[in-house]
Length: 196
Image 1 (cartoon, rainbow, N blue to C red):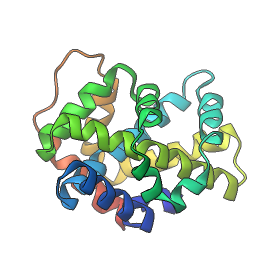
Image 2: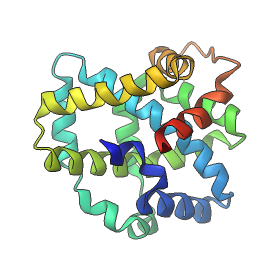
Image 3: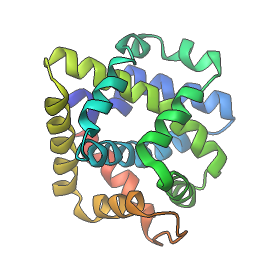
């Protein structure tokens, strides 16, 4: 579980940041800021989905299809330039809330929503690869995976109730276009909590 919370500070996370920065022509810190907001949103979305009937089993199937070896060759993965899998993962995790999350992250970070979408599509397969690694290391079944996500999101919620509450509201939105004005503080405060 620690590895998931420290993804951005890991070697894989740093390769993701520098690789996305190079491909999109933006600064490393901009990519980091996007990921600091996007990863908690993705974890919250995954947690929400696993608590739906059949959701944990569906996620376990998706995680099984994303080998942890992707974490050992992040630059190779980014270099191939095809992020369709990541876009599909985002669609499954966020559903109709995907554009709300992308727009909120864009407004908060100043990074264009198209670049935010690209960064999230790059990160999603890595996140599933990391979940694959965690499930193998800890011998988790679908219920164990669901419990792990609940613990991660619950811990983040306790340490930053306002931020996680806003993220959960973004994910729960059904495309009505209303985005909170004060989303900007979520990402970095959550990032600081995750990096502890």
